[in-house]
Amino acid sequence: MDSFIWGVVIISANEEWKALDPHLRGMNHRSYPLGTFVEGVIANRPLIILHGGWGKTAAAASTQYAIQRWQPKLVINLGTCGGFSGRIERGEIVLAEETWMYDIEERMSDSWEALEAYHIRLNLDWLTQPYPQAVHRAALLSADRDLDPSQIPGLIAQFNGIAGDWESGAIAWVAQRNQTPCLILRGVTDLVDNSDGEAYGRWDVFAQATQRVMNDLWRHLPAWLSCCQLS
Image (cartoon, rainbow, N blue to C red; front, side):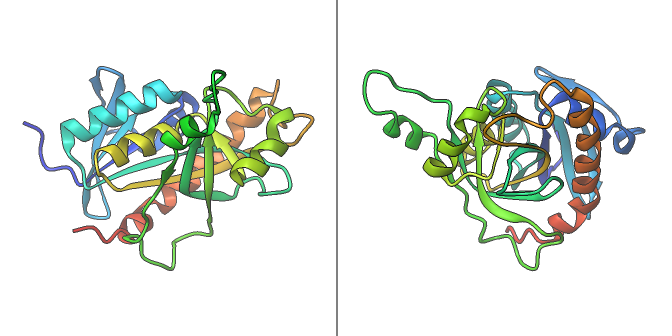
């Protein structure tokens, strides 16, 4: 029987998990069907910090596993995203208030019904202000691929998006289906415009920025937990 767990912190991509390794050393790493997790206490709250895996499939599966096993009061996703050039700057933090899985494409009829089926509006009324760090409350767009520069103008026009990632849409969707509050915080590692992406073909750009973003989010995590007024 697992002990009481207040919340689950999901870290999706391998590079994001790697960036937190110095903070997780000394903790007991345990395996579960999709990867590794550790148990710790932050801001007096017992937490599971879980490596969820990259992409929407792993994100959905690990979120469902975590909710069923630990029944947390809150699911938190800390991670990275690519920003739309001119809409946000490198290093800025997105607090997701909506998520879209924009790579759903229906060719037999209008795609909008399918897109709306996985569109989540996150209720953040339980999150007290002022927030511990500056954030953009905005929509995050998810797909199982990096942002296509040629699609950026359309993603802005259709979804009012400012940044994209691979997992947040799936995490938010599963959390809402389980009626579990969800906090998604993602930092911008690189920018993409309608011609190219800063990190495309330049892995070191992404890796170095991921270290900075994840350390920043981890440093502020105790304060974010203190903003969570959940019964």
